[in-house]
Image 1 (tube, rainbow over the protein chains, first blue to last red):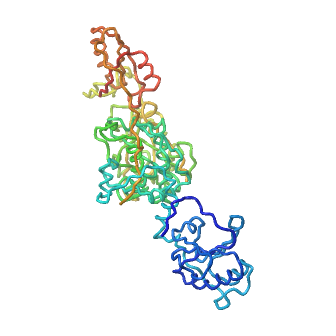
Image 2 (image 1 turned 60 degrees about the vertical axis):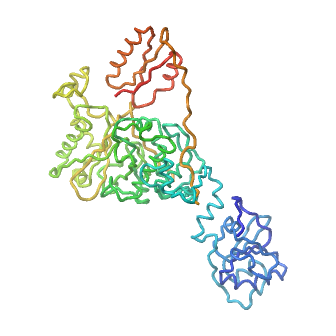
Image 3 (image 1 turned 135 degrees about the vertical axis):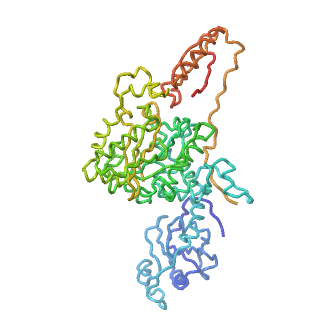
Length: 486
Length: 91
C-alpha cells in the first residue's frame, strides 16, 4: 500500500471518474461497462481501492490503495461515478443502474448483458475498521500537540503514571485517533483558545483540553460540557487558583442544566454523587486533569489541601429538572430554563440531612435551617458558601404546597439569622467565633448569593444534602455559570 | 509502539530570578505582607519589632484576601519599594 501523508484533498482529472474495489461484485459486474466507455472515447479515469491490478485491460487505472482520493472525496459506495469539470465535481452516481449511467455519460446501450441495476458495496474509506487509521492519516497532521512515542516494552497505562499525568487512577492513553474523535464532539476549532489555566497560567487550546478529556475517559459527546466547565473554572470570579491552593477541603463541582444532561446520559437521580455513571465521573475528572496537566496544579505543589475530598478526583452532576419544585440552578444566573449550562461551584461531597417525619414545608424548612447553620462551624457566619441539594421526596413536599425556590429562600432566610452575641469568640467555651466588633448584631449565616439550591437524587429516601462550600464571594470563589456551546 | 499526545502544557511556569540575599539589613527596607489570615497581624507585628531593632525599615502590606494571589499592582509596589521581602504563609 502506498501512503499519502498529505492532508490536502488530491485533485481529480477532468472527465469521468470511477471509484471501484475488486472485493465488490457490483464493481466486477461493471468492468465491461468501463471498458465500453473507454472504447467509446469517453475520458475515464478509474481509481481502485484494494487491488492496483483491478480492473484489468483498462487504459487509465490509478492506485488509490491508500484511499486518499476516496477519503477526501467522501466516497461512501463503490462503484461511484463522478463527473469532473474544470477540476470540480459536478455530479455523481452510485452503484449500477443502466438508466442512470447512460444519462450520466450520454452513452447509450451500456452493459447490454447486465441486469438493469445492482446496489453498490461500502467504500473501503468508510470501513469502520479503518476509520481511526484513516482519520489520523488524513487529518492527524492538524494536531499540534507534541507526539510522545512509547517504547515497545512500555505498558501504556504505566507510562501515564510514570510521566505524572495521572490523578491516581489509570488514564486512557491519548492517541491521535482518540483525540481526533474527541474533537468531533465540538464545533470549535482545535486551535481555539479555551482559557488561561491556573496556577501556571498557560493559555490552552481545545485540542489540549481534548487530550485530557480522552485521558479522563470522556466520550466525544461530553466534550462541550468539559470545555464550558474549563472556561467557567478559569474565570477570575471562580478563582480556581485559590481553590486549588487552599488548605480547605473543596474542589470544583460542575452542575449541568438543560437537555444536554439527559442526552449524554448524565445522572441526576439515584446515587447522583456516587459511582456508576460515566458522564458524571469523567466530566469532572477531565476538568481536574486539565488543572493538573495544563495548569500545573498538583497535590503537594500548589494544592495544599489538608485532607481534600474524594470529589477532587472529579465531581459533576446534573440537576433533576423534570419533577423539580424549583427553577433550574442556571436560572439564578440569568439563563432560561432549557438552556444547556454548566455552573461551577467550589465545594465538597455531601453531608446528609435526614428528616423522615416532616410533611409540611414549614417543618422541613426548619430542618434545613438547623442543618445549614451547622455547616463548617455553627459559630462561623458569612465566610463560607453552601449548596443545598433537595432530594425528590423532600422536593415533593414543596411542590404540593406550591413553594418555589423564591418562597423557600424567603422562609429560610430569617431562620438563618443568628444573634452575633451567641457566636462571639469564647461563647460556649469555644475560642473560635466572631470578633468582639460584631457584638450586638443579627447576622446571616450566608453572604447574599452564598447559598445555592438544587434538586437531585433518586426516587426514594426522605433526605436532602448539603455540599459544603468554601470562602464565598470576592474574597474567595463566586459560583460561575456558562452556556454550553455544542 | 504507541504514539500518544502530550497532555501537559509542554513548558514549565516562567521562572523568576530572585535578587541576591543582602549581607545585612542595616538601612534596608523590608516588606511584610499580611495575607489576611486570622491573627497573621500579630505574627507580623512581632516581626516588625525584631526587624526594627536590627536597623531595618519595615513596610507593611496587606493582601485583600488570603484566597487569591496578590494583585499585580501590589506585587509591583512591594518590588519597587522594598530591598527585601519576607514571604511566608501562616495558618
